[in-house]
Structure formats: C-alpha cells, structure tokens
Image (cartoon, rainbow, N blue to C red):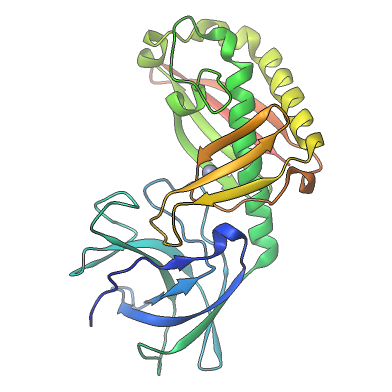
Length: 287
Ligand SMILES: [Zn+2]
C-alpha cells in the first residue's frame, strides 16, 4: 500500500468542525486498532513533539457507519514508513509528508478511495480553543509582569518584553477552558539574568499585574486569526491577535477562538515550588 506523499489538508485552523474527505491510507496498528488517513480533515491531532493541545474527539463516518475516533495524532512519512506519533523529525521538516492519523476500532469493508466524513465534538473543541487563546494571552501577560526581574538583555516576545515564557517553559497543557504551563528556573536562566530570588516575594504582585493586563485585553474584544503558510498539516501557522496596543503573533499549531469577545474573563494563578535545585513555576490560566 503506497503512503501519502502530501500533507493532509487541515481545516481546523479556520475553525471547521466537520469535513468530508477521501481515504488515502489505512494501516493496522500492533494493538489491532486502525489508522485512517484522509486527504483532508477538520480533526485536530495531538503533536507528540509539543503536545500542548490534546486531540479532538468525535467520529469518522464511512459507508454509513460512524466510528468513534479513539485518538488523533500527527503522523509523518518519508514514503516508506508511516510513523504514528513517533516521528523522528519535527512537524514541517522538508522532504516528509505530515498526515492526521485518525485512530478507530475497525474499518471492515473500507478501502482506499472511500469517502469519509469527520465530525468533531464542537463543545469540546470550543473549550480547548478558549483555553488555547487564553494560554497565549497569559504567556504574554506573564512576560510583562516579570519584566522587572531581568538584569540582562534576553530575546523579546511579540510585545517587546523579555520572553520568560519561551526561555523557561518545559511543558504546556491546554485543558477545557484553560491551560497549565510549567516553567523551570535553573542555573542557566539565572545566568541569563533572571533574578530568581526576587520572584517569591513578588509573586502576588506579578499575578495581580498579569490579571490586570488580561482583563484589559479581554475587554478589548480583539479579533484573533490564524495566518497560514499553506493548507497542509506541516505548513507553518501563526496565531495573530489584534490587541489595542498592536498586533501580536505567536507560532502555533492549535485551534483558537475568533475573538477575545468570546471570553468573559481570563485570570491566572502562580505556584512556586523547588525541585532538583531549581525553582518550578506553574501558571494556571482559567477562563
Ligand atoms: Zn499555541
């Protein structure tokens, strides 16, 4: 069976929750489940390289049978092997095709060339989109709120503040209506000029400043769009939010709200702990 040489066309960045496509590849997994690859899909897959936003939930309907999608994951193929969730390259690497692997229980009677309709659980998607939009805003708010703790020049974020988020993040998880980000403040961040010892006494102030910024942005009802270099899963996409003080852009493969007007509020909480000689900061964002 030949493997796809083209990326799956994905419509979830534009907010789509349903799509109809053609089956271009089927593959049996070791555990008996089946991977279905379509030429196009609205289903957001988890990217194992940076698994911030979980996979959509929903169904894949073929031949009048709606199969629950048990998992959806980014797959990569060099033309000879399909790597399902364990690609040896980053999503978007030249010379590889990146495909959405819809994992279902069985596809008896389905062949290559069959038509399939995917339907995403729209409420669950909306909650993840809200969480992801809030997550980006919170990272920007945190960067500004922590700006006074830097003593040296470091790379700046989309708004011109020291990019603590990018320099310290170890894990980001989007959840329904929010997110949890973990940051590590170790030796290298201190060497870069981050005044780690001042963080704890200032934590309440940092939280208050972040909440204040977030409230202002939510009140602005700023539009949000996803700019795309192409329709393929591996094409670069950028989250773009027209904040009152200027447009901000962050590279992002996830889904988002269309406007901050859809959010009633965004607030954060910060937790500081010690682990292996380093500080760990946890940012919880809630909408
Ligand atoms: Zn993102």
